[in-house]
Amino acid sequence: MAYALILGTAVYRDLKWKDLVEAFIGTAKDTAAIGFIVTAASFYGWLLMRTGAPAAMAEGMLNFSRNPLTLLLIINLFLLVVGCFFETIVAILILGPILMQVVTQVGIDPVHFGVIMVSI
Image (cartoon, rainbow, N blue to C red; front, side, top):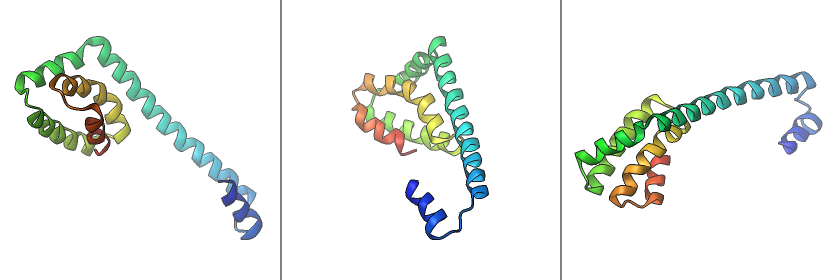
């Protein structure tokens, strides 16, 4: 960032102080919006954990099937649908703890599941 600032102000002389202030204000607004989304998702995940919804959802998925490949297919399809409507970070924060209980109970490697979760 410092290199880009030096190039823009000293070398190319395209970046004025007024433009720099506007860029900092825009960056602050975007950072605040992303921070609010992550905070709301973290609170929602905490609220779900307090109510016991993840355990109920995990039990429901395990009642459906205990085959690891079938569960991975179901989880992939579920994450495909969720990925169409939620931001990736929000989906990982909310669904990660819930689905982790399911995959550890059927013997799926957590690293393998982490790669699947990140690829939504």
